[in-house]
Length: 486
Image (cartoon, rainbow, N blue to C red; front, side):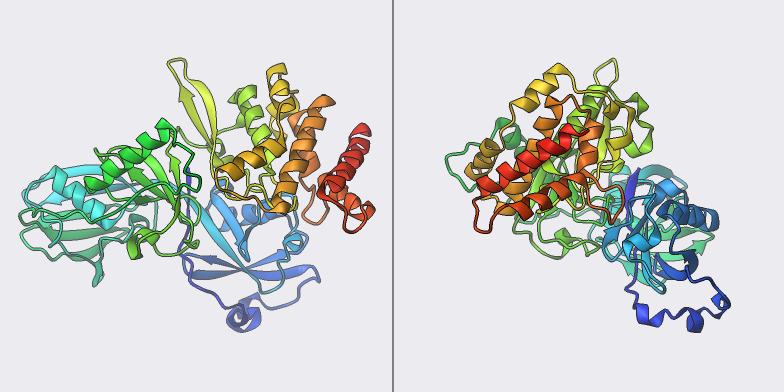
């Protein structure tokens, strides 16, 4: 299951007066009652809730009224996800007349049927993140003599450019696009209930020039030699680009990630994430050349932890995720960014953490771990894991990062020192991942976590102008006192 962002038009809250625009919502209401607006696919839907309602109850009401299951919903207010189901509406600052953006988790695949004038039928499934240009390529591969350059697809009087995404054309999960191949380059479309009928003409396929491109790593320290696995990854990605296999925009999250294909065009090999691409923006790859990007290996998987219950996950796999998240003070660890894979003939489950763009924050305010309440997190770490944790050294890790080109900011270095300190002290006392993680996470949106309280107390006792070492020593002493009381 993946996150596909619903196209939402900008909404000006001043224009959403509940009494003027939605008079049927008038009448008496309690002091706790407010009207909010759900922005969904360009439409704005009024909804009366109580400020004391939990986020979970709001999602249940959306499920009851719109038929969208809770697990497929993501509510966003002022750029922040309302992720804590037990928090109240007022905890997120949502007030009367405010706009919530509803993001849906949709199926990745769209059924496409290609029907020729001769009666031939081609059926295949297309990733919703694919473009119209990719559909043309699929038609050309299945049939013969279909020109990729001269084809024009027109839907409801609007020409569909090659860059248009399938998810933008197919607004519902069950819609199917029927393509009728004709002798004309222009395509006429008529709606058939939820479907579209497109008539296209195919000409002889012309040779196509490959755009010039360059893909190379950004190396700050010339003494560093890239590992073989990275060099092979770059080579496979380049081979795919040279064969004309363009990047496929991911339907996960709000955009900014592209799947890179190998030379066959049948397999993803890497993930390309432009640094400067804004969420919800038009595809960066389409509109301009990219200067810098994160380049990641694509991991084959069978879905995410969001698609299944946690009880089948091996304890060791959950524990490795917990060690990573606690050390990095991960502020965005939810079940959707832990992939599930099956290794070997026995089908052993392996958990693969992804999406670490909100790690090592400057403070601990937003730390969130979905695994906190999984049964595996209630069990103590194994002796091997304990030995691994005892060997961790934040200072050495910071030096390693600097060697590789990242001069880590002081406030981020402090976060790594404190989170590593907590992890090491926690395992020394035999605390479980859940117990240690709970120290880092807030119980409610406005109540500071224990680790935040420890840091604040250290700030209060350390004299102005003291060294960072003195501050960390104060944190260590206060942390010992708090942990000994558990």
